Length: 165
Image (tube, rainbow, N blue to C red; front, side, top):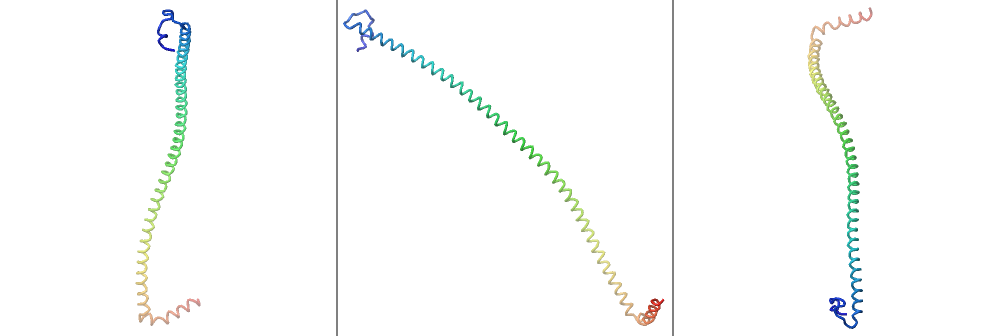
């Protein structure tokens, strides 16, 4: 069918088969109105889907943010607990270090005292060794002297008499 007939108002020109054209035009207008309504329904459905999608996105965003917040809180709590344990460990190590430093100072002082005692003992031993050497020379001088050799028999007699008395 040609479109020329659809632009002419019905009843203006009467042509053979005009009733058919009018019926066809009415059908086309009805179909057009149904399509317009379907299009309007689709637009409304699209708007509703968009609205639902925005609402779903907002819910998902809120859920994500809530879960993220909970996860961050949990991580922070774990971090705080670990930090607390590490701080306790640091304090414990600082106390142990201080005790070790005190012990080291005492050991260093004791070592210095022992070195001092050793040096003093070495000096005393050397002095005593020199004194012994001098006394041995004196004894050797006495033993090798003529008077010691002359008085040897008298000392033996005195020794025997002391044992017998």
